[in-house]
Length: 186
Image (cartoon, rainbow, N blue to C red; front, side, top):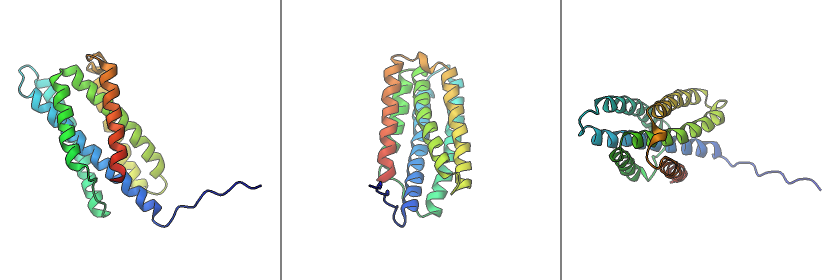
């Protein structure tokens, strides 16, 4: 008896997948900007944190460039952002501020956890898109390089020395993965 053939995707299946990719990446970049804004809000109030604030400004600037690119892509390709946009804006800021209140190492742990998930997420998308959307795959590859640099800098600055690092990192990673799933479809 022959193996049943897998169902062929229907018309529009690729378009739907591309919309999911753009929607979730836009949401992720928006949340990243908000995380860094939340951290900066806390560190700006403290004395002796100028170096940390400068680093956060630069990371936020890079994430804002990514966000602007996804804003354009959503508009150009007529893709709606996730319905969770208002929630991700508030949640991102709250995550940034709360980890900053725990201290610099916890803020770095937040960056390391988030950027590790996003880097893996981008890597999968790049592999998926490189034949059908090479320009988009190239853009994602550049964004991924920035995320890797953020992650590596966070590790170098003591992310893994944060209080309760394994728990903190696991919770943040799980939250990122859940946000990705929600943002893809809604």
